[in-house]
Amino acid sequence: MAKAISIALIVGGVMLLYFGGQAFNSVSSDVSRVFTGSPTNKAIMLIVGGVIATIAGLTGIALSGRKR
Image (spheres, rainbow, N blue to C red):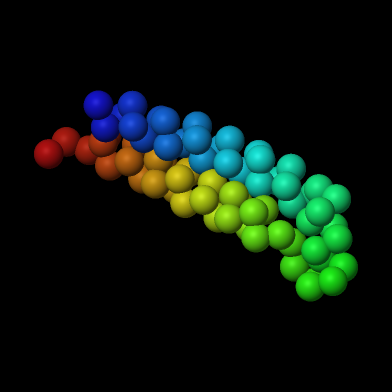
């Protein structure tokens, strides 16, 4: 069961990273970078969430392989 959750976290994390990359390269993010110097909060949150979910999934896979 733990492996299934870990795989779901990895898949979800990769999807969040993809959508974060799309949001990062969007027109609204470009406009935000012109005025504030940083991309939109949505893009940042999607990328950060994707990284955290992917790392959590990889950690779960690595730890579930160990014998107790």
